[in-house]
Length: 369
Image (tube, one colour):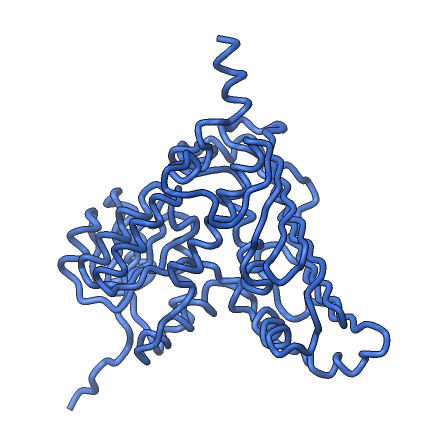
């Protein structure tokens, strides 16, 4: 008798650059998962993507795909403004979704997903793959155990470079389509990892500017954040920095733990420095993984959790906390005041959009017309 295929069945919606990262990661997990279908509004792109990555069927309509296919997971890899509508479609079809960042363009939008998840019981997950690298998981275990002592100071830097022509793509650099600049689209991966290690934040004070890029959004933001555990952190997000790097540093009472990489790290990118008198902590670090903190690790963890009937990550409430941090950065920068966690309620302009209708350079532009 032929053996029943027990692999997870997934589909990919959107076939742009980031979808290739998902498909390649799924290809590395071919023993456990198969791509059964893809969708793109461009039929030629859908057909070519399906052929390249071994999908049996392709669609030009995401709703038709979700209505037709039997799926364990759908990957949403479209431009940001379509993330929430597609995730809601998936929930109504009973299919968990793994959505590229940012999961939504506003807190108001993400709260629609929260309500829908409560009503349907179908999870919506966000791609924050750096949480799943071996070193990040090791750091969280050590921090949670108390071995490192109290977190005191942290630094989070996403210093990237995007030339003017990068923004020729119509949806880039526009509040209503992308939701924001590097705070939403670039640095969010690093400060999500920061939040996953340090826990709930309590207050943010920030600046944002459009230094040189041809965008409606900021191209630089800088924030100082206070955490419920007492730690203070700086968070820098930039797309105007010629020497590109992604860097996080955590200073605990008994050790400094830091990483410098660009788009993904291995254990070799991390440094562990115990404080004087705590040299024995170095034995607990024991770093030897050469697996890059890419999409494969998170996808593998998500599929395993779904198969076991467990709650997969990164779930909607964690995603909302990270998105609220981004909203607080913008609200603080444009209002010129600190913003506390929970302060941006449903009536706040910064809950409805990340720019809050208060972008200073937009007002200057309007005044000079």
